[in-house]
Image (tube, rainbow, N blue to C red; front, side, top):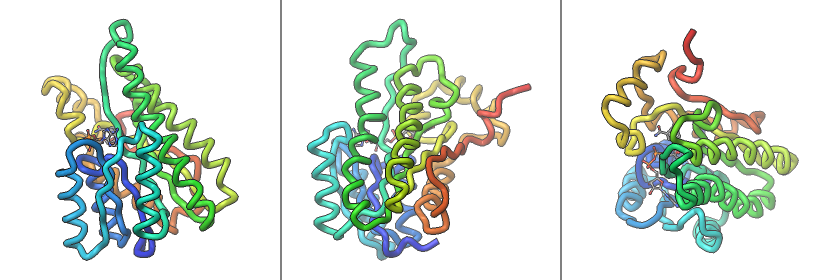
Length: 250
Ligand SMILES: NC(=O)c1ccc[n+]([C@@H]2O[C@H](COP(=O)([O-])OP(=O)(O)OC[C@H]3O[C@@H](n4cnc5c(N)ncnc54)[C@H](O)[C@@H]3O)[C@@H](O)[C@H]2O)c1
């Protein structure tokens, strides 16, 4: 796998899965734009780590749910590195609540970042990708988007929406050499799952056939493959990376 001629944007790249993706893409040679929102420190540290590896990297703060900020993110990337080849839509949040108690605001926030963000970022990179007739759009969905989860009506809807959006993008731009795929992680050990009570975490681990939570690196490996030339014939797919939990019990 060699991404040394490639320029990638990773949204929400400051920590967790996004951080692992940014570092993995750099390991296989890519120039990486590390996007995040709010505090720039975590993203700065990721960019620094990448620079130490001898790869190029910059931080671009932008809220993926805001169209003008997304436009600047992509424009700044193209201005600095001349192009954008790979977009990894990773930024995401949770605002869990049973549907009976879920506020409109919790619905709008999660859909705004987790689904509209993917729409805005994908739309913004399509023009430069179409011009060069090569591109990879990889979006982080979730098994929750496939099987649902009590307390996550907003999150599950957004993650299911990513799958429909991915398949649509795949059909619209396949003829331009651009692929679009999604990854559906199960439960990965990050700040997002560290919010869960210990008892619930243990309960989940007991249901995972491979016996543990996944690591951010488990997701990053699949992203790097989908971004590579080797994955040229794969588009519109959802790859589940979940230790087998979505297989269900007999
Ligand atoms: N951790 C899991 O078990 C798991 C499972 C399935 C899917 N996912 C998905 O993987 C992705 C990463 O999850 P994680 O566990 O690393 O989460 P995390 O909370 O550790 O990291 C999310 C990152 O996204 C950034 N972010 C949040 N809102 C943003 C915005 N509006 N614009 C730009 N950046 C923003 C955050 O600042 C943070 O750096 C998310 O899309 C999440 O839904 C995670």
